Image (spheres, rainbow, N blue to C red):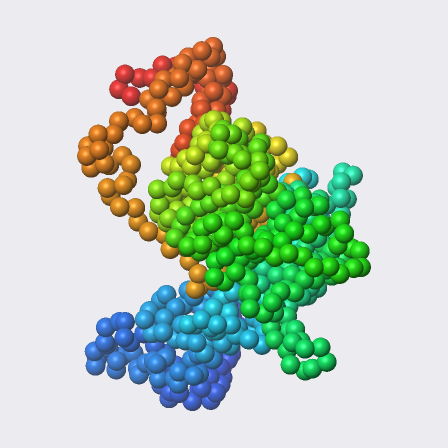
Length: 617
């Protein structure tokens, strides 16, 4: 009895303390429940707040007993559509797109034009014009959300992409051009921005780190161009094709819109020259060709005609006025039925693409002509403007022109390369020159193509909707990140490409990637007919084509003989890696082979005995 009384006396205070804690917890929970019921006023004391999160149009209806057990759910469809759109408009664009993929109801709500109008005004409060098109507010919002200019310097220790400052007034990014010191960006409403770069010193060399501020250079711009050479040192002047109001009669107030070409100094953004055309002539594109003393300006009209005029750049900074002759180019004079859709140029040649997909060439120097066509048989030094037609199997959509090589992309997404291949810049797997367009069979449906001095870049999209950058050619100076020795075939570069990348450009010091997504523009690739697919039974049996047209078997035998000539296993591994780089494989396949060879090489170097394969393997 004494022992029991002592035990009860020792546990009495502990029981009272536990009961007091439980009572305090019940009081706090009760006060929280009353506050919730007071502020919501949506349910009684016995029923909790139950809101139905799923869409009633997508899920099965609940029974009467289940409804009684769970209470009366409140569907989001009972709220006014304006209130739902207003709440959803506060979401980030990425979350808004993800929410629209959950069910049919949210897809309709998230795709409403009112939601995108609020998002566009939040992203660009200074934007006055919402743009044009079928969905103007959605197009404007996505353009301003995805706009960005990324760069990666080839020199130095930092090998990651950086983003430059984004002008708040810019309505998306349509085109860009890097110069020696700065970057120029044209948006979708015709405003040309002048991004001034912050220069830093790295190992005694001056290079820019990022765009620190921006200035509006001009408005009403249609297109712009600079010296067509790859080296930005030559980009002294910037030629801008714009539309300006011009007085019809001096001393009167009546005016008419006329196209003009304004010339600016790229170092300071100061306008030094201006030429105005007649109001009856409207242009849409401008490119430059030739040297400084005989700079030819090529202007493409809305009707598809090419006009040209010659300017001496060494006299542009002199304050004087003179008249230049605007003449019709020979491609439009001798072939008046052709309608040119776009054009591109370098310092000694010009490439025209018609609306029907035809390609015509102008080559002005014998050296470039020999690199492109492999012969000087048809070259006429007295008539350099005569266009040459390229024989192609399908309609060409867009092209890229380097110093002595070019790339073409047809309507089926196939890539054709032509020209000098000394550094492997054609991506054909070897270093043999091509005098006619040659297909790169392991690459298809690129987003954009760029040709430099002695290397080429391709922006492609993988099956997981991510984008990757491929390159081939000379890798000196870090111009092919991850491949300092270069590659004769297109390999995946060590660059983290933005999700909405659409254009790229490379200089000697830096790689630039432009990011901007336009929902109304897409490359209209078609599926290749089965009868024209190389390697199908129908095509090989019906036409009697050889089974090995490219000499693949002979090349593999040559590769095996090279491997057998190596004496050690280490040399054979290195030779195999080199052969994989030569072979025309896909980027994923090459990465797989290279990683597998690295694993085997590390296992062999770590002391693992590499013997002959087992009979069962």
